[in-house]
Length: 273
Ligand SMILES: NC(=O)c1ccc[n+]([C@@H]2O[C@H](COP(=O)([O-])OP(=O)(O)OC[C@H]3O[C@@H](n4cnc5c(N)ncnc54)[C@H](O)[C@@H]3O)[C@@H](O)[C@H]2O)c1
Image (cartoon, rainbow, N blue to C red; front, side, top):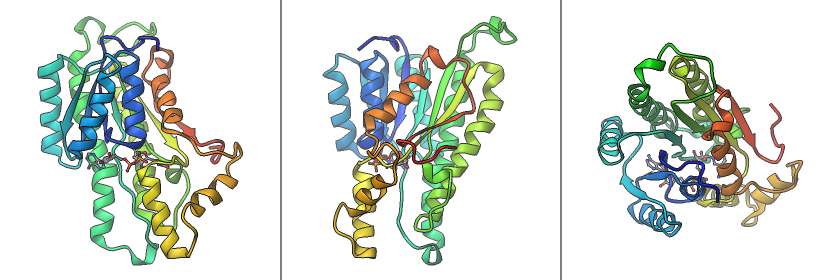
């Protein structure tokens, strides 16, 4: 794989499995040093081993992204080890399938704390470091193509519309789109790009959890909920973690230096807005 990210340091949250793991392997494969920021120590260690097998440097950093103090410490620790941070992929997220009228305050807060609040404070802490890295001579600078940091937030097609069985999740993912636009504006003066990716249906452990719940709730056969959804996808297939990683790789590359505040659906055409 072309070493386009050689010399870059990337933090990928929730990189122990699923989409985050796919992204971490892709960025590592392109030469970046990857921090696997994850709260599951076993899966974090496995991702690190797989990145190292590609002859790249990786670090498992155990963290709950909802813990703002720990997130700020992580930024300091990563800078102490690698010297700088160039890329943040805010991927960690949780879902819960439950009818809207049955949601409790605790359930609402858990999803929002991780998917929305945690994502924002992770972005803020890393952006603070990226701003420090902007050379003083270019702070009011030129309009030539360059970037001093790339941030990609993983939202969802659920953030584009609504979900009666995951109202809190859809709300958190809609908030991610809003945070992406506000952060893109706030960080544009520093030439830091902020964009979002909206996956559609991606078979990962998260999807297994969704399928199991829907199987019980709706009396479906295992795997039926994903099969039904795939039927409604114009390209008639689910996306893979590699499909999402490819979009992220573009958004953290120099090819996207003039793109900020955007959200890219990677969903086989499920949403077209
Ligand atoms: N799978 C899909 O179909 C799909 C669709 C749209 C959006 N997404 C989004 O993509 C992202 C990844 O989804 P996935 O399917 O790979 O999920 P997953 O559950 O398979 O993996 C999520 C990873 O994040 C980690 N994580 C969760 N909460 C964390 C926390 N508080 N701190 C640190 N790590 C934490 C988990 O341990 C796990 O390794 C999520 O933000 C999800 O909402 C997924």
